[in-house]
Image (cartoon, rainbow, N blue to C red):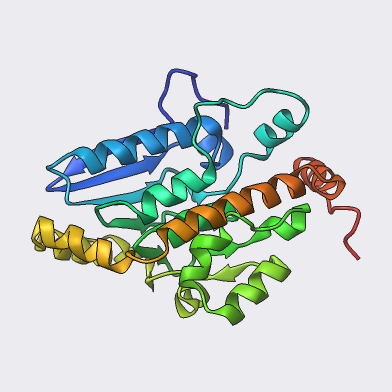
Length: 263
């Protein structure tokens, strides 16, 4: 798919009966978390949180992929010397904005999630996906590590599941994701809207002040420590992305071949 016109938003927001739906709309790169998309996503999240008419937020994607994670083309350009957008929020800011939001965020997955996309899933308060959805912490297969997303993911997944999928990078299904705690529910595709709708009706029925208080209660501990952890993980992530293995991993990804280390 061709790249979008530079004037077209990569993130859009719609509202209905107190629910703001924020849609990642960058199909040309599988809704990857480019600087521009992160900037627009942060702005739409902030606008929804500031709107007194919004009770909760649904986060979803356009097309067949929810989010493919980092924009590897953009990463490569920056490592080659292109200056990053200084105004663009980092991954930590995006995940923190969701985890510490005063209103509930529901991830309604429209399709596959990979790498950094799983950070969005884990950061959300509730996450629902069709049973055929596939997931993967694919970082190790391109020479990097899931540093930044380890913070929200570790809140959700069991240690055994996280260890397996972080180390192997293998693809796993929605049922496994739900069993591990990464998803709230894996449902038949035909029931996705109905199940999500029941969750949203529950949020609509909650008193706004009590809903905000309950959200704060659930995330009351650890915000300061998470901030420090994100800072450490950002340094670690940058070191791995600048490595020779990561350069080979990106080249193999774009050339659609196996990296040289595959046995």
